Length: 300
Image 1 (tube, rainbow, N blue to C red):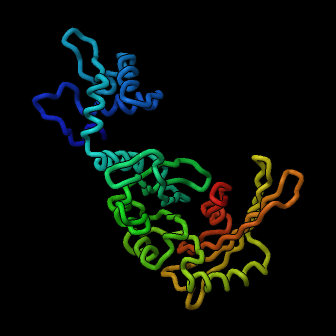
Image 2 (cartoon, rainbow, N blue to C red; image 1 turned 60 degrees about the vertical axis):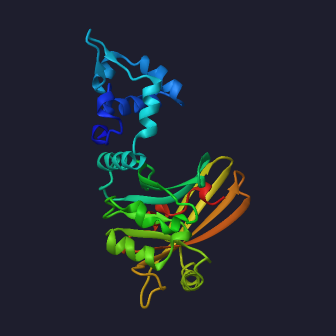
Image 3 (cartoon, helix red, strand yellow; image 1 turned 60 degrees about the horizontal axis):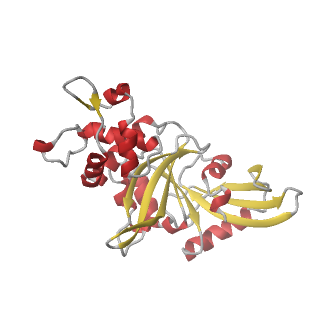
């Protein structure tokens, strides 16, 4: 995969194959190197067997030669980051359990602390594949959000070229709109699980009316977790959406997830409620709770 990246160097000055340089950069980063000097130092200590497996250049007297810190820096700065990122995402897509039942993709944007370019602070919008049990969490693709725009306008750019057919795409309330729902189902052949909040007033009103009726019934799923000095209890109600629906294309099921937090003695501390909607017809309440905004750090 690394060997297929376009080499930015002048062919007349190439001493090390691009795949070997990038491979050494990967291995040394995994070994703990955090800057170019450490990359070069760690590369110089790599065993000959590993350098050979990475395709390093061989000296005329026999030993494999590791690229220097200067070479690593020059190549990593000049290589096309978008092409490299797409290739890495495709490789991860092929090696993770992305086509097994239960796989999902989380769309999320993050500020890169301390990272700036000429337009200001960098914001990365990424698509991370995962399973409800947390296994095989890998980033399939990421893009920089252009200055003056938001991540909600960049879904098509992010998912272009990524095969997400059959996946359950999860995202926060900022992405809950008719255009995104329709594109995910029609264009990408995926399902969605989206959070509904007050930023979509008419949609929220319809979902809230259905949710209020729903919580009068017995819950479909309850789970409890103890840790970090508290007890978290998630209660999930789920129902099929019938009739005219709630105003979101392909919406098939709606769920209400309530999180009750208590201390270890059982004294209540807080309660939060979230409404989610999915296009997947047969998604159970337990599966909705597993893929929904359930982790405690998402509720802070």
